[in-house]
Image 1 (cartoon, rainbow, N blue to C red):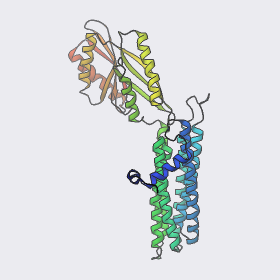
Image 2: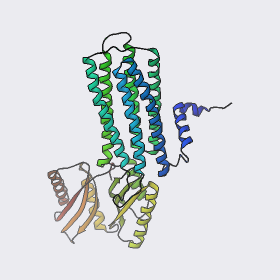
Image 3: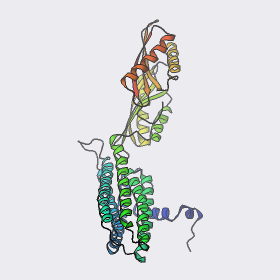
Image 4: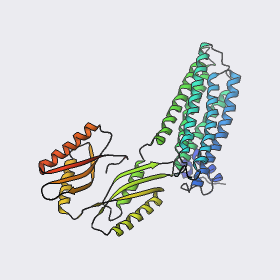
Length: 409
């Protein structure tokens, strides 16, 4: 007799079934950093989605045809688009895994996002078509014939869709796939739309009111909303969304662990698909250390962090005068001034040009959000006026930088 542990009971049957499928068809399933393993996850999720949605489409279309319900028929074709979306997502994984070539030196990873975008437009198309069909049903109502067996089958289809949504969520989180996460959200939305259809089918037994067409409108609008949400989610990384805060923290904290690196700024991360990130950053290092020694540390940092975080990291060295008393005093005074202005996050790349009382302070300030040209000039003038209250003959030459990541340096 097989003993089931309390831990497995708590995890639930959905997770256990999902993990059983994963272990059955994916060897070395825990090695999700491996591109081949990740692609197998996409393939398995795609096949499961195609088979499940095809069966649901056949089932619901048959019930809709026999009962004359436009709401059930609309829900059936929603499952049909979900089946197509699983196929497209699976193809997207295959195409995204193609190696880099001369025309695409950073690989084809963004094709995964494009496949999700195609799916989103398909969902929108189905929603628009069934808004039209449902409106026609309201204008020309047709009686819906209730039957117990189809009603029970519809309830079963909701259970299947709920499991499918959870399965895609588990796989999507495991391999960090925005496409599969979107499919999971769409599937859970289908549970709600199917619930509306089941309700209208049940109520049709007790009333002659043409509720079917109105529920069809509701279902269609939910489908449209799901399509719009998918478009929004998939377009964002294609346009160049802000990088993940955890990745930013990992890069910055990782660099600051090296003894000679005292500060980090100008971090920019470009996403060319999951597992295909390129980052560049400026690291502040002491100017009184041998350049070859600094280069060796920076070179090690690039290699070690690139391997650890699965990115391609490029580091620019910014020397700072850590033992110059004039530099330290001036930097401290500027830091106090900048701390009083909420628009300024930080300062970096300070250089002092000139000797004696007349000096130019050349440095960058980092701001969060977009400032207009006039606001930038006001900010520069304010900093310059504040420093001249302390040193009347000093002049500030300021470059305004924008913060491209979700972290304040």
